[in-house]
Amino acid sequence: MKAKVVVLAAVIGLLLIPFPSNAVEMKLTSSTQYLWYTDFIADDDVDAVAQYLRLNVAKMDSAGKVTITGYGRAMRQFSTGEDVEGRLYYFYLNYRDALPDVLDVKLGRHFMYIPSGSGIIDGATLDFKGIGPVGLKLLGGRDVRFIAERNEVTGAKDRTLGASLYTDAVKMTHLEASYMWRYDDGDTAREIVGASFSTYLPGNVSLYGDTKYDTLTESTSELLAGAKFAPLEKLTLKGEYYQSFPTFDATSIYSVFAVNEYTEKLIMAEYRLSDAYRIALGYAKEDFNDDEDADLYEVGLLARPIDALVLDVSYTVRNGYSGDLDGIRLNGSYTMGKNSISAGMDFADYRRDSMADNETAKKYWIGVAHKVSRDVSLTARVENNENVNFAHNYQGVVALNANF
Image (cartoon, rainbow, N blue to C red):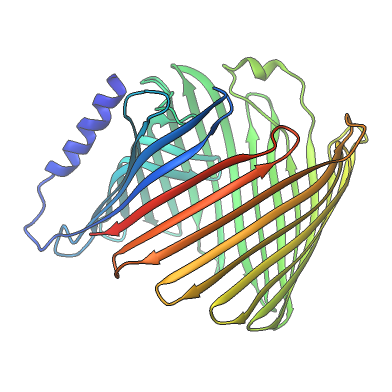
């Protein structure tokens, strides 16, 4: 309850900030939805109504530096009889050049990212972008987390603090290093050192990388290094090395369990046959440690034979650790003036190591949309899943979308 009061106070405080009188521009996007699906945890069918709202307020000052952005949802599940549940994803003030050419400020509930981690906080991010050749980002606030369809699951003492130093002094190159602290009910849960870089080289070559080091477990929890190369105008090649070592909050019971390191080596190629057709090929070697690995092959085609029709098909084969899989995915959409229809199917034939026989999993879906006017549209989507757990599992959504 205390956390909700803090958020409400922050929202009211933002709205009461005195700004010079201007023709304030306000935009509101609404999506009213009726949903039905199966709650597997409760083993029950659910039907619900949800209201999503996105707010953008601009031109709050003469220079157009101050904006307010918000996004949230209210939901009522009729089948369970629960009360209306609200979820505020973000609501914050963005003050660009609060100090001219030196400082940007975000205040309120907002998404933050630095190489050490990301998430939603109730707090502030200060971006000192003009300290000579470097910039300094400082952030802190209450950590905000959601679980399933429920409300927030974090308390007033769940906090995130972070600092990041970055530079763009080298042409076409970004370098950044950061440190993040996370606290669970006041106790230290994580301390992460992070770094990232990206650069563009002559000859249509780009390099990038990210890493995270967990100081509490003294382990590299994540490492990514990649390169993109376009040797021909229509051909793009990509190679990546990815390494992951699962880590958990120090306050979690899962932190005492033994885990294995995972690595993946990936190569991909995309060739543009024409403006209407593209093909892609990919291969990944997955290594789960303990002499367990798997091979993953993918091929895809994106086609637009006519302006109104888009087709996307992909085929995947995986062999190795935990079982084998053959799968195909097909999606398409067709537009007819103010109306459009889209449909797709997934089909997978698989066998896990613990299974004696092969099983199949299938998903079919269809969606329609109608543009009532420039600012109002109707959409609907229905999906059916079939696999070893159930013969049919239907879910869907009907939505009325509007811009004001």
